[in-house]
Image (cartoon, rainbow, N blue to C red):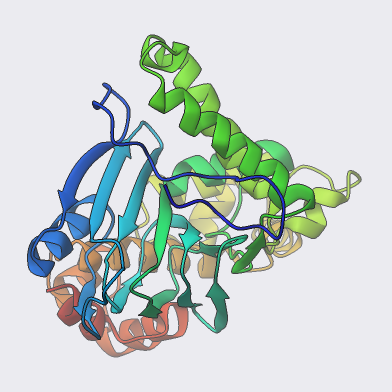
Length: 344
């Protein structure tokens, strides 16, 4: 087995074993498969991505392997290409953590970059362009895909109020010490439960969900992100119910022609007071929040290749395609047509 080398500390994560699969354990999907077969299976489990070999298999390098385990809120998998590879999934649409078990992976998410090696995991946000241009032939990674709603719910529980948009994490999570090592201990517990066919996780959905949420909540506490200062300040007041009421209504139907007057009536406050509340607790106006939610929904449609750019814009309340394209580029770093073309 490949294990993480953490500078003298005991092995932290091992590759999922080769034994018989369990109901919720790791299922082997590919081993020594043709590259296009491996790529298609990888995309089915994690994300639609451009995946291409950039070198040849080297003597002594372990062959390709892909295993996966899909739970309620998480998908976990072992990925090893066995050849130098470039992976470009674009905006992932989910939170991800990649934990190197061997080798090295050049990694970028938005403007943040790192060299992922054993002892340092990479954390990705849903809405920023992710690319791994240098996945070495000997690199194996444990990849964890996290439901966006689950992670944001865990953060909201800790904060005591909803979050206004996706959570932007720092990319480099040090697993060798402090909070990062503590989080990895939780992950090791989850993995051991999945690998053990007699564990409680296979008999109790409630226990499995508890472990999943413990892992997700631990990540929110362990890694740097744009809400961490608020988490560390217990004096931060909870978001007023008026703001949450409007957020919930917009989230449920962002395509509606929301005006400030409509939202103020819903919140039962003046338009000025509602704007004040949004600025205090979300750092944006109500109308900007509506636009952000609409852009997220349009992006989801394009990533799923469920509609054309014009259809996505119209469906979510954008009447001017030029303004839609400009706002989309500002939020996601690329034109909507580029997103759709890349996915297709």
